[in-house]
Length: 137
Image 1 (cartoon, rainbow, N blue to C red):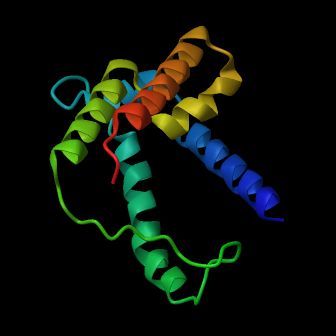
Image 2: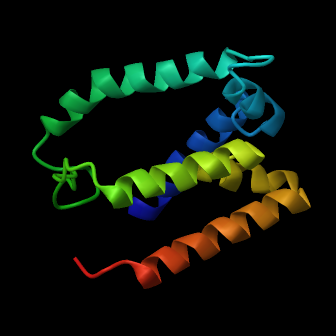
């Protein structure tokens, strides 16, 4: 049941990303071009996501446990360090170069565009490399 719920959530998320334009790299790059021909559409998408999160997160955390897990796994680290800043910079550079972040990139694989496969492969290689070089916690 847990895997079916995860599959359904992933499908809804992917369809939502496509419907909102987040899998359209031209639209995303237009959104990121605030000094040029700015496309503001995605600000509403992100604002809507933030609003839903702000409203529902406190309600969900009132539960004693998630539906399909024994406990919530909420981050406790609040420190802004070099690793966080570096990771955010790499994320932003990747987003700005091609117009994808991880969720939309995975959702866009259904379009079968070779550049998307290259991006996702590079993203996965970066994840594996980061796991190899990350110092033990």
